[in-house]
Length: 102
Image 1 (cartoon, rainbow, N blue to C red):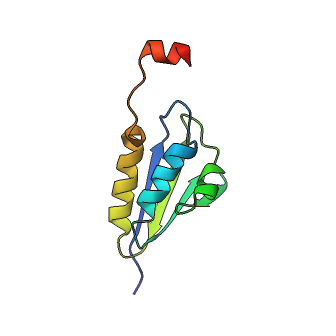
Image 2: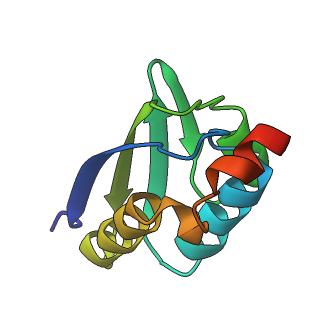
């Protein structure tokens, strides 16, 4: 019997891309699931449970990532990870003044 497979494509909307803080959030969430989860950015693929591999994706703002899960909770994992990205890693939007100050 084959294991459930789920896949989603998301777009990174964080202005600074998938840097360390969002990568850690992503890995923390992915690690809660039993499924094997991979993330692809172009030809580069990463284990979603490895911070090092996730940061090596070098996903800038606007990058489209494919998230794939294989395992007993694949659909739940994809839903949770897709929501995390859609909510911009729970970042508070910066005001125009804060962006100017850098």
